[in-house]
Amino acid sequence: MDHHDHTSVITGGRRPRRTAVRAVTAGAVVLAVAAGGAYAAGLGPFERDTGPDPAAAEQARAFLADWAAGRLPSAAGRTTSPGTAQRVLDSFTVGLDISGPKLTAEQAVEAEDGTVTVPFTARMPVEGLGTWTYESKLPLRERSDGDWKVDWRLSLVHPRLSDTEKFRLEREESKPPEATDREGTALSGAEFPSLGPVMAQLGGGRGGTGPRGAIHLVDRASGKVERTEARFGARTVRDAGPVRTTLDAGWQAAAEKALAAHADGKNAALVALRIDDGEILAVANSPSSGFNRALSGTYAPGSTWKIVTSSALLLKDAVAPDDVVDCPKYLTVGKRFQNVELSEHPGATFRKDFTESCNTAFISLRDRLDDGELGEVARTYFGVGQEWHVGAPSYDGSVPVPKDETEKAASMIGQGRVQANPLIMASVTATAVSGTFHQPSITEGNEDTTRTTPLPRGVVAQLREMLRATVTDGTARGLSDLPGEIGAKTGTAEVSDDQDNNGWLVAHRGNVAVACVVEEGVTGGGSAGPVVRGLLAAAPADSE
Image 1 (cartoon, rainbow, N blue to C red):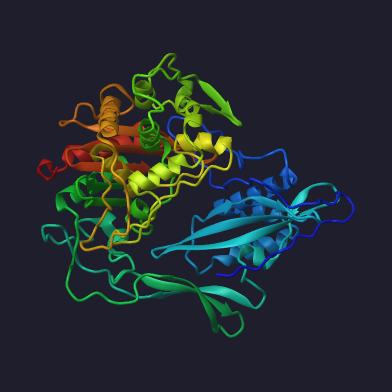
Image 2 (tube, rainbow, N blue to C red):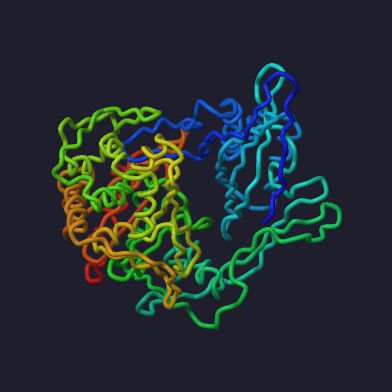
């Protein structure tokens, strides 16, 4: 897609002309803080002292945060035309079935004439179809009183939105395919309601009969389609007959029961998959209609990500489990990081830091990894960020190179811009305890374009030992009385100042790895823990 360039208007004579284009990190609007930690969630932790006026970038981030959160009067008030802006923002997604947009600011750029522009990426989830992703730019104007405002224009909402053109969603009716589990048992929506979002998407747009649709740019007056902005779903129809899945009816029933009993009505999702081949045994979503959080959600993984961070450190002998890595209450890297309930463990070993999920200890080791090393390890050994062909639409993770030291610190503990979901974290757990990545699958015969390297046996042994210790002596003690040798890792991811933390837990037992997230679950052990415990307690032992 080509994008229009926008130039902001600056009131004349108040600021000196610059002689070069300069940039400052604008940060991400959607910030998350992980497990056991409080990554003080502001609108932007990554300001620098050089470049454009930080107030301009701050206003841009605040506008995007308000827009994403649905605080449209507040967002409009940050523009040069509040009335028009609120009317347009109110109407922009009408009929597009969009909720929960994620708007991510990039670097603020100041040109020689003082013009300030903040590019951003918009990810608009379209209910039941997928995500409409596009890029745009926010121009900013400095007013006579020195305050910055978003210089309102239609094209900042989307580069092609105009007085003569708007967007329209068209859905193509399609019946969800009939499906069976791995043994041929029919999977009905009545018996397994939380499979609803998955059943509608089987085939993943590669020959399946999942929902189809498109967002078109249309003429406001005539309704004529000018171009197609996004297309969702398959364009061919699968042969008649039920779709054979890798799901196990017993595991799926246990997953449904665990979510219903322990998610407390919150948005939640879980995935259970086989460690030796990546085949998915259970996928459950709450609520049971709408968005497939389990496979397509985008969440900060919190301290469950410390599995990957530990792998990166252990791979290069940067630390060993018995090394002393102090765990103070606080550590400041641009911003102050802290541990859950301000816990501290003086003289702790790295193993203890892992089992107690010590944020400050992990952050203190950040200089032992190169800036892009965590993302490279995630991609090379765990397949995260590569394109997965699961058999249904999936989000396959993102671990960007950190923009500064604060973001690097955050990424060490699954914060900042690290993004995952239960599918990814179940796979990460399976890879960690087996050493080998297997592309997850929910149907047979999917293309596999991933390329990964096995983890060394010594690293796998260390990871398994630390995961087991987290159950016997750490934050996952709630699983310790279940049968089998269970290993696990908890996580707590902060979303924003006005939302409770998301709770995470990953676990493995036998040949099965599990991951669960509970939105606004407060803590991982307290919210996702009971769900996973319920699943493992009820799951059929013979499939492990």
